[in-house]
Image (cartoon, helix red, strand yellow):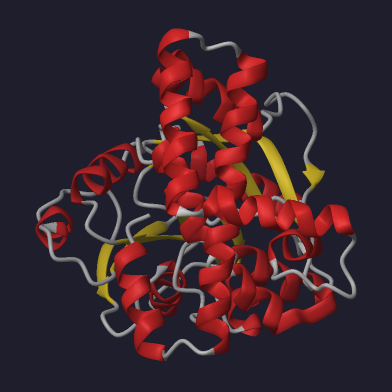
Length: 336
């Protein structure tokens, strides 16, 4: 068995159905398998998987004790038989040469991990916010050379299975799809493993969640809730120290006056009133005057407030939140 494709899922049966249909069209001559991990699903995910005709072995695994993609991916990897693991999400659409491209880079660069590029639905480019969001994730032309990167994502990530097992998999305390892949990469780099971007591997994110500034702010707020956990685990080695600096509570004897003012501003921006006002302003500008310099600045202010709020909520969990609270938040946010 050459490659095991692991797909975690939570209540996204329709998206998963399209993902599996797309994946089944691989032009791949080596032996491979697909493993779908049902993580606390209450929809017809099992029926979708069990009733599907698939060209290679298709396993259905359940992980019902811990919410989140970390736990689900670990469960899938534990059932894998492939020399290599390839992780994708339940809403990722791939090209027919997807597996072959990953395998080619894995074998060309032994000891390295491979990540591809994720692009959003082309329909999003027709909206003001869609164009702003696209600007946040620069696209690398597929013809460019493979390069080392820090931009890891579990949406299109491959590695030798032995590496994953040696590292102990994803940290299951990350209950949201955010930070768990970067944390795994930190441990991998300590072992001398490099992550390479293959620009020729391009997948489509079949997901409308986060297609508006309202949804995207909510998503970023939820994602940021795991950052204090990451920070607590690594301290000064945590790679996003600027995020901590700007979103932790004011330190009156340490922070500069300008930083304290910015933190207080973000606190207002992240309040219920601040978010509602900013989001209403964004909607109004989108409709009547979608001038990018002004509208994009308003987007950035709304996102700054949402990230600040999410970081404060994450701090509460780290400092005093119960395991049950984290568990319930994980269930609530798992589908995102």
